[in-house]
Image 1 (cartoon, helix red, strand yellow):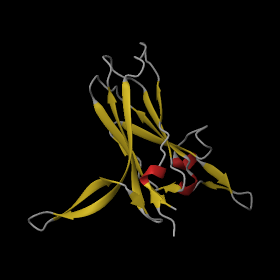
Image 2 (tube, helix red, strand yellow):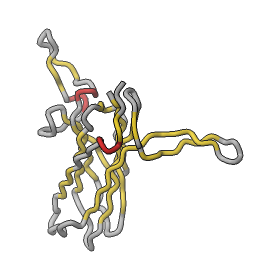
Image 3 (cartoon, rainbow, N blue to C red):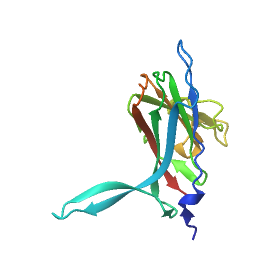
Image 4 (tube, helix red, strand yellow):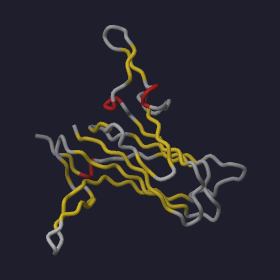
Length: 164
Protein backbone atom coordinates (compact mmCIF):
# COMPACT_ATOMS: atom_id res chain seq x y z
CA UNK A 1 0.00 0.00 0.00
CA UNK A 2 1.38 3.36 -1.03
CA UNK A 3 1.35 6.35 1.36
CA UNK A 4 2.19 9.77 -0.02
CA UNK A 5 3.72 12.23 2.41
CA UNK A 6 3.28 15.98 2.08
CA UNK A 7 6.98 16.48 1.40
CA UNK A 8 6.44 14.54 -1.82
CA UNK A 9 3.78 16.98 -3.02
CA UNK A 10 5.73 19.25 -5.30
CA UNK A 11 3.50 21.94 -6.71
CA UNK A 12 5.07 23.83 -9.52
CA UNK A 13 2.92 26.91 -9.67
CA UNK A 14 3.78 29.24 -12.47
CA UNK A 15 2.53 32.78 -12.44
CA UNK A 16 2.13 34.90 -15.50
CA UNK A 17 1.18 38.53 -15.09
CA UNK A 18 0.32 40.24 -18.34
CA UNK A 19 0.53 44.00 -17.89
CA UNK A 20 -2.30 46.12 -19.21
CA UNK A 21 -0.81 49.48 -20.05
CA UNK A 22 1.74 49.62 -17.24
CA UNK A 23 4.63 47.42 -16.20
CA UNK A 24 4.24 45.18 -13.18
CA UNK A 25 6.72 45.46 -10.34
CA UNK A 26 9.04 42.48 -10.32
CA UNK A 27 8.26 40.10 -7.46
CA UNK A 28 5.17 42.00 -6.37
CA UNK A 29 2.96 38.89 -6.17
CA UNK A 30 3.39 36.34 -3.41
CA UNK A 31 2.09 32.79 -3.95
CA UNK A 32 1.58 30.00 -1.44
CA UNK A 33 0.62 26.47 -2.48
CA UNK A 34 -1.04 24.11 -0.03
CA UNK A 35 -2.60 20.67 -0.22
CA UNK A 36 -5.52 20.27 2.17
CA UNK A 37 -8.13 17.76 3.21
CA UNK A 38 -11.56 18.24 4.69
CA UNK A 39 -12.08 16.84 8.19
CA UNK A 40 -15.17 16.79 10.37
CA UNK A 41 -14.69 18.38 13.79
CA UNK A 42 -17.10 18.29 16.71
CA UNK A 43 -17.22 21.50 18.75
CA UNK A 44 -17.97 21.82 22.49
CA UNK A 45 -21.72 21.94 21.75
CA UNK A 46 -21.51 18.62 19.91
CA UNK A 47 -22.07 20.27 16.51
CA UNK A 48 -20.12 18.82 13.61
CA UNK A 49 -18.42 21.23 11.21
CA UNK A 50 -16.05 20.72 8.31
CA UNK A 51 -12.57 22.24 8.45
CA UNK A 52 -9.63 22.27 6.06
CA UNK A 53 -6.32 20.99 7.41
CA UNK A 54 -2.89 20.74 5.80
CA UNK A 55 -2.06 17.26 4.55
CA UNK A 56 0.73 15.47 6.42
CA UNK A 57 0.28 12.19 4.56
CA UNK A 58 -2.37 10.80 2.26
CA UNK A 59 -3.62 7.42 1.15
CA UNK A 60 -4.57 6.35 -2.38
CA UNK A 61 -8.17 7.21 -3.19
CA UNK A 62 -8.26 10.28 -0.95
CA UNK A 63 -9.75 13.45 -2.39
CA UNK A 64 -7.57 16.43 -1.55
CA UNK A 65 -7.75 20.15 -2.24
CA UNK A 66 -4.93 21.91 -4.09
CA UNK A 67 -5.04 25.59 -3.12
CA UNK A 68 -2.96 28.56 -4.26
CA UNK A 69 -3.24 31.72 -2.16
CA UNK A 70 -1.89 34.95 -3.61
CA UNK A 71 -1.25 38.49 -2.41
CA UNK A 72 -0.33 41.64 -4.31
CA UNK A 73 2.71 42.94 -2.40
CA UNK A 74 3.25 45.77 -4.87
CA UNK A 75 2.06 49.34 -5.01
CA UNK A 76 0.14 48.98 -8.31
CA UNK A 77 -2.87 46.81 -9.22
CA UNK A 78 -1.97 43.46 -10.81
CA UNK A 79 -4.05 43.15 -13.95
CA UNK A 80 -4.68 40.20 -16.28
CA UNK A 81 -3.49 37.77 -13.62
CA UNK A 82 -3.15 34.17 -14.79
CA UNK A 83 -2.17 31.30 -12.49
CA UNK A 84 -1.26 27.98 -14.09
CA UNK A 85 -1.15 25.05 -11.68
CA UNK A 86 -0.16 21.54 -12.74
CA UNK A 87 -2.24 18.69 -11.40
CA UNK A 88 0.27 17.00 -9.05
CA UNK A 89 1.83 13.74 -10.22
CA UNK A 90 0.01 10.66 -8.96
CA UNK A 91 -3.22 12.64 -8.69
CA UNK A 92 -6.14 13.27 -11.00
CA UNK A 93 -8.41 16.30 -11.27
CA UNK A 94 -12.00 16.07 -9.95
CA UNK A 95 -14.48 17.35 -12.57
CA UNK A 96 -16.10 20.70 -11.82
CA UNK A 97 -13.97 21.41 -8.76
CA UNK A 98 -11.92 24.43 -9.96
CA UNK A 99 -12.92 27.53 -8.02
CA UNK A 100 -11.88 31.02 -7.05
CA UNK A 101 -13.36 34.48 -6.83
CA UNK A 102 -13.36 36.47 -10.08
CA UNK A 103 -11.61 33.69 -12.02
CA UNK A 104 -12.37 31.53 -15.01
CA UNK A 105 -10.79 28.08 -15.25
CA UNK A 106 -9.44 26.39 -18.37
CA UNK A 107 -7.69 23.03 -18.60
CA UNK A 108 -4.82 21.38 -20.45
CA UNK A 109 -4.35 17.78 -21.51
CA UNK A 110 -1.00 18.39 -23.22
CA UNK A 111 1.31 19.35 -20.37
CA UNK A 112 0.24 23.00 -20.27
CA UNK A 113 0.92 23.84 -23.93
CA UNK A 114 -2.72 24.71 -24.67
CA UNK A 115 -5.87 25.32 -22.62
CA UNK A 116 -9.60 25.17 -23.20
CA UNK A 117 -12.95 24.46 -21.59
CA UNK A 118 -13.70 20.76 -20.93
CA UNK A 119 -16.16 20.47 -23.85
CA UNK A 120 -13.41 21.44 -26.30
CA UNK A 121 -10.69 19.15 -24.93
CA UNK A 122 -10.88 16.19 -27.28
CA UNK A 123 -9.06 12.87 -27.39
CA UNK A 124 -9.21 10.10 -29.94
CA UNK A 125 -10.35 6.67 -28.75
CA UNK A 126 -9.17 3.27 -30.03
CA UNK A 127 -11.73 3.42 -32.86
CA UNK A 128 -10.52 6.81 -34.08
CA UNK A 129 -13.56 8.65 -32.72
CA UNK A 130 -13.17 12.05 -31.00
CA UNK A 131 -14.48 12.23 -27.45
CA UNK A 132 -14.34 14.79 -24.65
CA UNK A 133 -11.20 14.18 -22.57
CA UNK A 134 -11.93 12.73 -19.15
CA UNK A 135 -10.87 14.84 -16.14
CA UNK A 136 -8.23 12.17 -15.36
CA UNK A 137 -6.43 13.37 -18.51
CA UNK A 138 -6.06 16.97 -17.28
CA UNK A 139 -2.45 17.94 -16.67
CA UNK A 140 -2.88 21.61 -15.73
CA UNK A 141 -5.53 24.06 -14.52
CA UNK A 142 -5.29 27.69 -15.62
CA UNK A 143 -7.09 30.36 -13.61
CA UNK A 144 -7.61 33.75 -15.31
CA UNK A 145 -8.67 36.57 -13.01
CA UNK A 146 -11.26 38.92 -14.49
CA UNK A 147 -10.53 41.92 -12.29
CA UNK A 148 -7.37 43.59 -11.03
CA UNK A 149 -5.80 42.56 -7.75
CA UNK A 150 -5.26 45.79 -5.82
CA UNK A 151 -2.20 46.42 -3.64
CA UNK A 152 -2.47 44.42 -0.40
CA UNK A 153 -5.41 42.40 -1.74
CA UNK A 154 -5.40 38.62 -1.49
CA UNK A 155 -7.20 35.83 -3.27
CA UNK A 156 -7.12 32.10 -3.71
CA UNK A 157 -7.89 29.48 -6.32
CA UNK A 158 -8.31 25.77 -5.78
CA UNK A 159 -9.29 22.46 -7.27
CA UNK A 160 -9.84 18.98 -5.95
CA UNK A 161 -7.75 16.00 -6.96
CA UNK A 162 -7.70 12.33 -5.98
CA UNK A 163 -4.50 10.54 -5.06
CA UNK A 164 -4.03 7.46 -7.25
